Image 1 (cartoon, protein in one colour):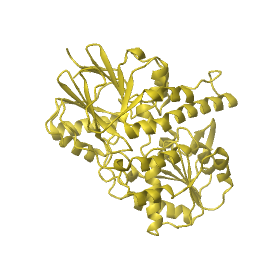
Image 2 (cartoon, rainbow, N blue to C red):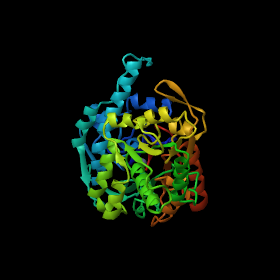
Image 3 (cartoon, rainbow, N blue to C red):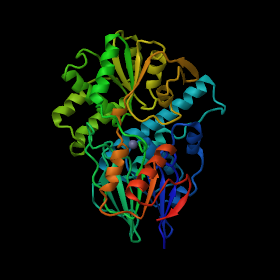
Image 4 (cartoon, rainbow, N blue to C red):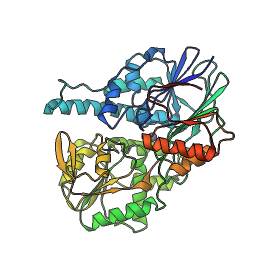
Length: 454
Ligand SMILES: [Zn+2]
């Protein structure tokens, strides 16, 4: 009996990761992510899945980012009652991220209804904060490198992928086949995270390709960020930094603290972390001391690098603050969250700056800013972009083309088939060509919805 895999997300896009593995009528879903970016992609979140949620035996999460975990509340609402297996840190992060995601969906729907620019009346949230809270008890934590069985006869284990706290590659052994899911791979030289483990042997490999067509610049993040912040501080402007509450927020904070310590930006430059979720996530690093590089001293410095902004009132008060400052706020691709208000307020002034710190998926406001657009649509309004836009390529939490290839080369033996996933089409195809040319392995970029035997 064969093992089949169906690609239900993360193909031709970095978002919506969902891979359904089937064998003898048993179904395991690897990742359960939200689509983000282009409206066409976001609409997929509203389409029914090609299977009944209650027929899925288990879910395995590679990590907590919403494009890998954010569909879980919907899956549970549709009747999924199995277990969700994740690393300890991923479970803890989901406890913060998923309720917040539900809350944001509710807020966005309420905002649209208040301002009456939805074609659908009234606008509904994809899921609510309560839906997210309700699905959390399904998540079971598994230790690193230890085999567990989500389904009798299936053997699964988590291997470190770097990237963010708790991020894993997943090895599934079923019916004599070995399937390896890279998850999002971090970089060997990340400021915060440990390097990915060498991959275990597998017959079939799914590898991410966010940066499948690019190598990161040699310039390091401290130099790039330091110069940008020095420049905006000198002209008395505000730097708005859209950050993912998990991962990016912490590494930018840590970098800022290092820059201040080295005297490369003024000690007095006020830093605000305007994301309650990022505040809570930052505290989680202390609870998982073996999952990152920071010693207690560095951790303390990171936690105290910024004024923490918890309430909406405190957030609004920031607009009355004069003089140079740096505001870190979610979300990282400016698809929602408090950063929108800061952008709307600060983009029209040429003294200000937007610092993009990670990958910006096409169709997101972050990508629009990175492309040099002179106008940005926020909450139904066109906001003129006069502020300087800086994109820190060196701040990425993803392995680049060279590092992805190096990870594959560390496999103990050649796999029979490689699937290139989790990338825009051009990035995925570039990595496919590179793998075929350098490693001579059979490689394919799967179509959305396609099903293949492993
Ligand atoms: Zn990720």
